[in-house]
Amino acid sequence: MTAAEGLVLGLDVGTQGTKGLVLDLAGGVVARASVAYDLLPGLPPGAAEQDPRTWLDAVRGVVSSLLAAPGVDASRLAGVGVSGQQHGLVVLDEHDEVVRPAKLWCDTSTAAEADELSSRLGRPVPTGFTASKVLWLARHEPDAWARVRRVLLPHDSVNLALTGEATMEAGDASGTGFFDVARRAFDDAAVDAVDPALRERLPRLLDVGEPAGRVSAEAAARFGLPEGVPVAAGGGDNMMSAAGSGATAPGVAVASLGTSGTVFTWSATPVVDPEGLIAPFCASTGGWLPLLCVMNLTGVTEEVRAAFPDHDLDALTEAAAETPPGNDGLLLLPYLMGERVPDLPRATGTLTGLRPGLLRPGHLFRAALEGTSLNLAWGVDRLRALGADVDALRLVGGAAANPLWRSILADTTGVPVRRLVEAESAALGAALCAAWTARRLEGEDVDAHTVAAPHVALHDEVVEPDASRAALYAEAKERFVELVRRVHG
Image (cartoon, rainbow, N blue to C red; front, side, top):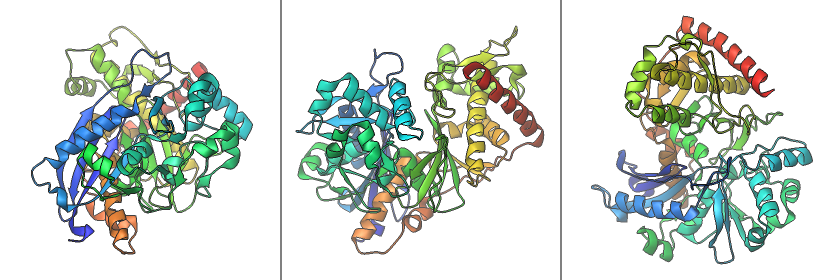
């Protein structure tokens, strides 16, 4: 059996849980599993942390379910790939034990350190990036920093547990703030600006397409995977979502709608935003992945849902659909967790246009849908200004299933939107990267796009923007932007 005829397993280690799937490369997805978890409770405002051991427990549970599923023969497993939430700081000691919980992408407690690094380096270092977290740790918890021997990203820590080898790859590394995206190498000046001791704590950087290793004997006993199976380099969840949604070649723009929202497209050359709003990521499969990320998306709609326990998401969507576009003037700046684009890490949400009768489930839910969509569309304008082609959007992630949200996104961005059949594009992308790695190990000279493209399917439905609604939302976006400037300067 060749790798192209085998099974591959993809894991997506996220903020709300770990998801996994098994892909039969001669067919389709044959098994799925997930394990949910949450942030650590009781942290100070702005802090968002998880224990990396929680992720490994979830990986064990997901793998166990997948390998026990009907149609899954572990002896056919040709490779494993891991996708992980980006930017998180995982710190391990000399025995590879966790020194302290990981500070996550959505942690805004390091805003002062991000501002300081931006000033030192003469370029924007977003608060969410890993660099500010390292500086924060060295400054606020020096005893813990002194014990650290490895600095990893979340998906790197899972690869380490699977292979026994510490590595990093350019896609995920490009979200650290101490990486030279154009050279695809660590930025020595930025590393020194964070802390010169960081350099010796960083792992080996993999080449494009190089495997992270193979499932070790210890990992086989711990996770139930066959020993010796290749483990792909994998990457950050956005890079893996790109692989799972077809953004591995020019001409495809993808919007990923989850806890955070992202829009990205593949580029053959680096795309660097002088204001630092569009992340100049590397693609894990080669090339680059200019990416817009907003921190507030489904977290905002979940807050509205929690406020009305008698309404589920379907009921809220139905109520919002009965409310006219423009929401009778009710407008939400949805910055419940601060925001990355625009760069407002200390921001809070603002609801304006309140009048009698508007504090109702339908109006408030539509305010969440429209506010998050207007903010995302504002960021898409920035992508276009930098030369990225966004003429249509492929939608992935849980929120893509909401028909009203799809319609609002088409109208606010002004382009057709279309869902991918596989909503879990990051897990699929991780599996496809595993297939690509396995085929390369067998001696095939094949690129990632050739491996991935046959497994990326789109729904037939295309949601076109409505001209009258698009004009209405264009005016609403101007009001939105002006409100941001008035409230946040």
